[in-house]
Length: 109
Image (cartoon, rainbow, N blue to C red; front, side, top):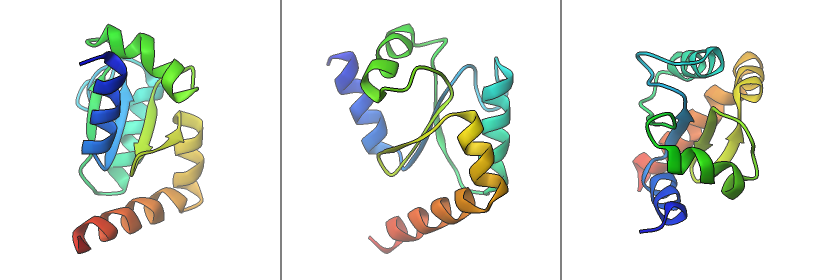
């Protein structure tokens, strides 16, 4: 399986997925820590990929996503953005609404 195929599969198989540096329990950068904290406020489970442990993904995902930095939040197959976008969405209530609506959509299926 190519790296791009692996990325596509991860995005498809995880409704809420964050590509980050480190783990949610032990983030390795401040931006990843803030993004995880924002996601945690929403109260739903999310998957993660530690790009420091997956250098192939760290190298290829920015090209695939056309987004140069980490973290990267993907919800329902769509790139939402990085830390500043995640925090802005949390602040204005959009993140909670998007996650809630997405979870509802999948619970109906």
